[in-house]
Length: 298
Image (cartoon, rainbow, N blue to C red):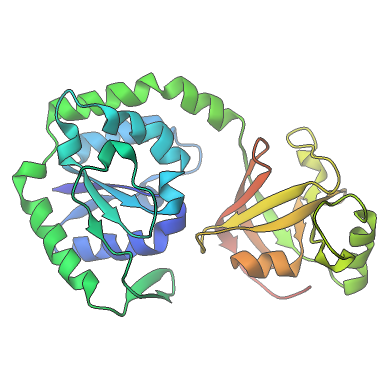
C-alpha cells in the first residue's frame, strides 16, 4: 500500500506531517522531497511513482490549485472520466481555495477551520479536527474501493504524456541553479541602489519603499528585466511571496543580493546557499531549498 501525494511545495510542512503519520500506520507515501533529485525528469519519475502507488491524494490549497504540478501533470488525469478515476481521488482541502471543477463533486476532507502552528519543518494542529480527519483517511486508504487499478494508472500516464509538450515548453523557460543569498553590508550601500531606481519603480510613495535586488551577471543571458521591474520573490516556508525591485547585476560572484525586508518577508536567510528558480514570464524568483547556513546583515 503506497500513497502518491500531489501537492504544492508551499504546503510541504503539512505534507511532511501527513507522510510521517501515514508511515506510523504502515502506509508508505511517494513524496517528491524524498524521491526527486536535481536533474530528474519529472514525467519519468511520475511514471515510476504511479506504477508503485495504490492511492492518489491531492492536497488542495491556493498554492496547489494554481501550481504547475497540478495544472500540467495531474489536471488532465483528473479530467479523464473513462475509467471512473475521479471517484478514486482522495482530495484533502488544507487551506481555503477554489476546488478544481474536475473534482468539485467529490467529498473532500476539510481542514480549513483547523488551527495550526509551525513546528520546525512541519506543522502541528492544536485543534481536534486533524485526529478525526486522519482516522477517516487511514480507513479510506485501507478500503480497497479507492485503490487505483493498473488500467487507471495507464490512463493517467497517457494523459500526462499527452501534456508533456506543454510541460516541457514551460519547464525550459524556467532557469534553475544554486546561488548564495547575501544582503547589503550597510544601509548606505542599499541606499545607493535605491537612488539608482528612483523614478523607475511604479507604485512606491518614497525611496524607502524600494527593495533592491541584484542578480549575478551570469544570469544576464537568462533573464534581463528593465531596471525597477517589480519582482515577486517566494520561498518554501510560507504560502505567499513578497516583492522586490530589480536593480541590476553583480559582477564579482554568483550571489544574489536581497534586501533584508524581502528576506524577512519570506523567511529566507542571509549567507546561505539556495536552489532557486527564475520564471522570466512571471518575473518570479523562488528560493526552493536551503543548502547551507551562516550569519546576519541588512
